[in-house]
Amino acid sequence: MRKICMMELLSDRRVLSYRSVREDELSCNIQKKMTTDDHRVNLGEILFWASNRVIAMSAFGAIRENTESFMAVVNSISDVLGGMTVSDLYPSVKFLPTLTGFRSKLNRLHRAADVLLDEIIKEHLARRAVAGKEQAAVYIVDVLLDLQENCTDLESPLTNDNIKAVATELILGGSANSSITIEWTMSELMRNPRVMQKAQEEVRQVFRGKGRIEELKYTNAVIKEALRMHPDGPLLGPRESQVDVVVDGYLVPARTKVIVNAWAIGRDPQFWDDAETFHPERFLDCSVDYRGTDFQFVPFGAGRRMCPGLAFGMATVKLGLTNLLYHFDWKLPDGMKPEELDMTETFGLTLRRKNPLCLIPVAYNPVA
Image 1 (tube, one colour):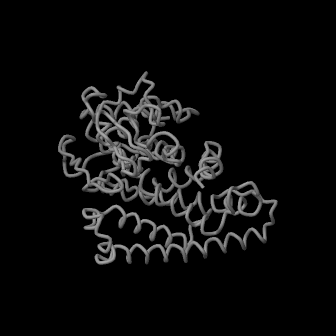
Image 2 (cartoon, helix red, strand yellow; image 1 turned 90 degrees about the horizontal axis):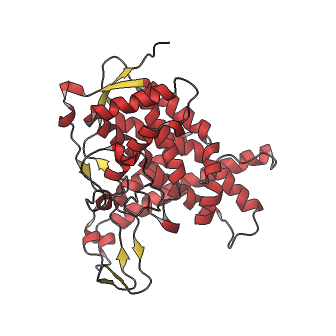
Image 3 (tube, helix red, strand yellow; image 1 turned 90 degrees about the vertical axis):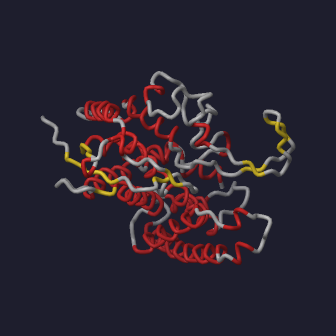
């Protein structure tokens, strides 16, 4: 299934095909949500809503009542999984998940998601029956249904349960991550007016003509620096050692659960000068990247098990951030000074702000 995700659903070619979806949902809808009469907005809430719409449109091709309900259920699953429970502290006590109600709550949410996905798949099958097989599959569910019908060289048959699992995993892994990265980037920009000014000048200069996101060297460095300090997944997915291995003099026995602390690596002074300082210039003319080849910077993991949605997520982050920087100037509310902005983090599956980022957008009107 991972190979299917990488080759068919989240390849660079496929991600590029969703460009119009990203532009419609981010460029248009974010601007509609902003007020320009000196009222504050909860930026994280708006970004989360817009990111959810991008994923839902890419996966299902439409926003309907059942897709909205499914997204809400998946987000609830994320909240449940991201919390700390008593059974996490005492994993050897097998009955604790049942006793605390954790298991029953999770099972109830999974059943609700399963019913809604059954409805969505049936709708897509009905539309495909009317449109005919010659119509190209565009959205993720349709691509998977095409593979189910036509691909004969899979190691095992692609079932509806597989399709539902992939859809759930994609949304569970991506619904919050893009919005969290943009929110932390904007938080750091508000704390660092010099960096904000430089990034906005670059964005507005490049997009005054027919510029492309790839030309935004400084803004891309800003995003990298935000990912270094605030990876949306502070702890990479748990892995299990297959054999006994010695790492830096420590024996890691076979079958040991290993969790990589990406947050700590990104702030390690052994690898980063002024590690606690937001300084995007460190990534200019620097080959260090987040694609898993530089082990001092692994916000998405590395190797075969790195995040398969990297290309999709970063395309969303870059477009969302550049829209915010191009179309609006930003002010802190209540006369707050940049250094007074609270940057406290909350721990979970994702690294969220403890308090929402509330800002005042001021519409930017470029002089022709």
